[in-house]
Image 1: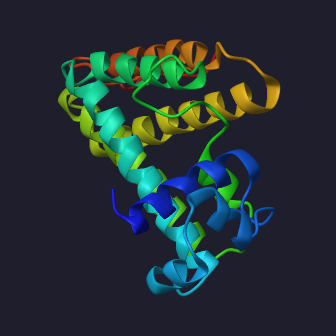
Image 2: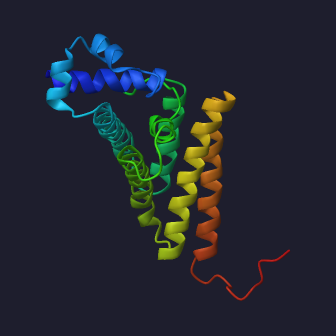
Length: 204
């Protein structure tokens, strides 16, 4: 790991645990053991360094999650594996991923205004999660509109699980969200099965 990579990795851990604006340049330099000259050789500003930490977080997270999902088949098994992985993340049970301290992307976004590069990078990473979920739902042969609805809903369940775990201390939230996702998938499958009577009212 070269000095630039070391600085980014150190900054990511510092920002994850202490926040971004609360941490000054001098602390970052001290934590990383690099000079101010070294930092500014690689980054024009602290904000540019923050953006690089988002890229690193994104890279590490998707490498880890894709490895977890790659061990199972697509479809329902992958969605279960997704929430199992999230449960391990929340409970800091997988040494291959960082300890749990909420979602770095959400926390980082909260410190910058809409339209800022950091927020745009965080949003792009979140969209990648939706895409990942969608890719594992395609084999269920949902219609396009149902596929989009399913991917969005499962993503929102996962986001809610992370928030509930961090804010409310509920470390079982991912397991509950996974069960809810399974029920939703079964509901969508029932609605789209061949021969279903689509003329019947859904009102009770």
